[in-house]
Amino acid sequence: MSTGPGAASAPAPTAYDTQPAPDPGTAADSGAAPAPALGTAPGATTAEAAPRPAAAPCTAREPGRTAPEPGPAAPEPGRAAPREAASARRGSSMFSSLKVRNYRLFFMGQVVSNTGTWMQRIAQDWLVLSLTGSSAAVGITTALQFLPMLLFGLYGGVLVDRLPKRPTLLVTQSAMALTGLALAALTLTGHVEVWHVYVAAFAVGLATVVDNPARQSFVSEMVGPGQLQNAVSLNSANFQSARLIGPAVAGLMITGVGTGWAFLANGLSFVAPLTSLLLMRARELHVVERTPRGKGQLREGLRYVAGRPDLIWPIVLVGFIGTFGFNFPVWLSAYADDVFHAGAGAYSLFNTVMAVGSLVGALLAARRGTARLRVLIAAAAAFGALEIVAALAPSYWLFALLMAPIGVFGLTVNVTANTTVQMATDPAMRGRVMALFMMVFMGGTPLGAPLVGWVTDAYGPRTGFALGGVISLAAATAIGLALTRAGNVRPALSWQGRHPRLTFVPRENAHEENEENREPANAAA
Image 1 (cartoon, rainbow, N blue to C red):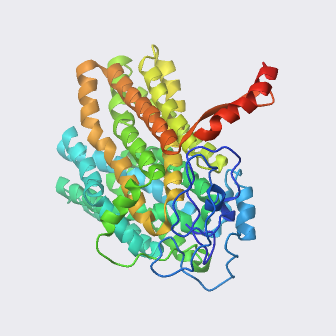
Image 2: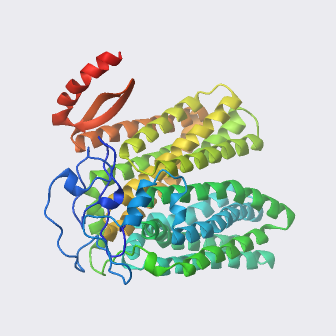
Image 3: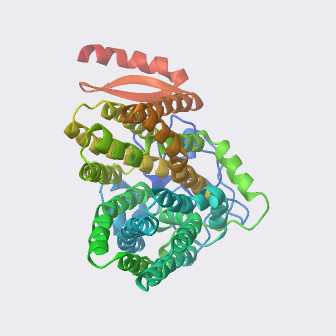
């Protein structure tokens, strides 16, 4: 992720900040320098964390450097481009990244495509159920769509680091469009068989292996570091909006004209993202120099993540929550049928309320403008605690209302972890790291669902839901403690006027910090 043509990547954000974060664009040219210690301000430069010599000139072998492009001259090392610095200062605007033309085109294309994707998901499951009458066959279809990510996700990340992002996305999006059009042709002509749907689901999964990390890392090339969290958050809001609209449109289309037309609508919806990619101005992209082909790049990516606590712990946390905390299809259907005896209407209501909460969470994350690991840990803890409370909810309407804050905090975990990992990753490694992130996040739920389902069947929905919340809360607590130890920081209570403020300070300074704050604390009391 670069701050402009020819500029270097932004430094990694840290776990806990002790002072307001400076503009992201003001970071000194960091190259492949290690992330600053936990306890410094998110977005602070490496120079702020510890003095270091100036970076060496960019070479082809140095990871993290952006390829020079013709166009406006790059700013001096250590200084931000004026426009980007001003954009970072306006980061509190909820839709600020939409001011970037390339990202605005991308966003509009994804609005249409995501709606079509949700339509195909509903139509695909309904078609398989119609052809076989078997819920197990629907499960096989879902498994086939996720299986390529589990098997080849890391290799997809290696490819993404080697390939230019925009042409790669043109290929993957075209491949997904063809699967929708093929299913539409087979269904509308009456020749479709269940194995056709299986093949199409697996083909979409294969395209996703490359498409997901490419799209994730391409966001930073469109907007730069100053707008990254805002853009990632708006992507999530985009997806959640489509989650509300797509299934409803698919239901009307399936009932009115048939399943095949929903597949056709999805295939045609890819015209929008393909057009947006073709209309982008290449000179305005923050292009990162591609990683040359070489041996051991997959192992190199894994070693890179393993040696970075600010990367490995968010990924581990997302893995636990994705595996044990996001099994809502299992829990919500069980609550609708077995606990409240309210049927399919209740299941639909629970999912709709959660989707609304997720949309609100995405917009709030867009407004925050910064990604901090302490926000991630707090959101994960709140998510787990709310699941426990919801598991014990005595009434139907209380349970339904609790789905909204669960959606807010669940989406906050997703967006904050995604942005934190992207900001902390060297651009030359971003494809591999984001492939690992998506593999853990997307692959965890199918792996955890059978276990959670067994617990729910054997001990009841309340026990199964509460277990997911307990594991999520325990993971957030344990990883929060691990991050404070890795960053050599500890909590310290200070006061702003009459309001307490919890911050994290270096351990050697914690005693002095508390001594300084004792007098104003007593006065406020």
